[in-house]
Structures are given as C-alpha cells and as structure tokens.
Amino acid sequence: MKENEESVDPRFTRLFLLAEIDNFTAEEKKQYYKSLEDMGDYLNIINTAAEIAEKRGHAAGLAEGMKKERYATAAKFKELGVDIAIISQATGLTVQEIEAM
Image (tube, rainbow, N blue to C red; front, side, top):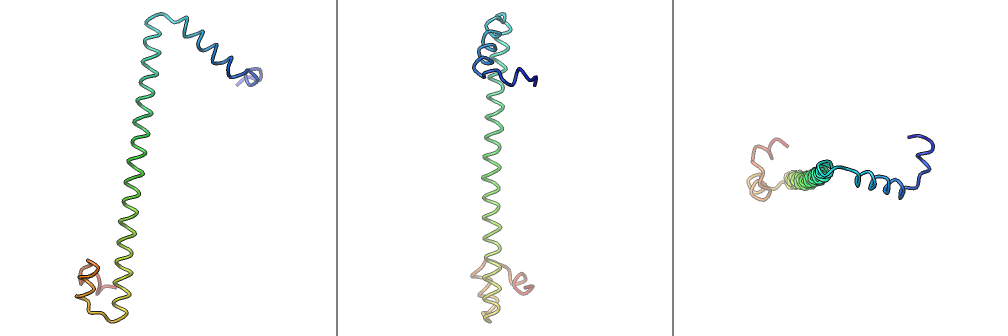
C-alpha cells in the first residue's frame, strides 16, 4: 500500500467505492451485486462446513475418550481380579481385548 493511502480515512475509502459503483452501467451493477451475493453464499458454505467439522471432531473426541475410559476400567477390574467375562459384560470390550491387556 502506498504511504499516502495508509493515512486515508476508511470512511473516504468507502465513499469512493460507493461513487465508483454508482458510475457502473446497469449490467456492471448487476454483476457486482451478484458477485457480492456469491461471496456471501461462499462464506456461509465455509462457515457451515467449519461448524460440521467442529461437531464431528467433538463427537470423535468424546468417542475416543469413552473408549479409553472403558479400557482403563477394564484394566482396573482385571488388576483387582474380577472375572474377565464380567469385565467384558461391564465394559463392552471383548474377552480377547481384556486378555491382551
């Protein structure tokens, strides 16, 4: 950006833009407003995708945490000498998973 442009009041920049738009032909205005609409749609798509990704990440994190908790519980029960079949029933882990601990 040029040195003199940095000191321009943003309100004047906006006024210059509005004046420039006002001088557009009808077709140019139509294209300009369509591009603004398209940009808004694009931003909405990006925001929606980000929200979905965040929710999926949260759900995956919860599932992983629950899995780790089941393994920790099973390990503690096994350490206490609880029967493996009972540990399997209580945690939902297979007998093979528990025996492998």
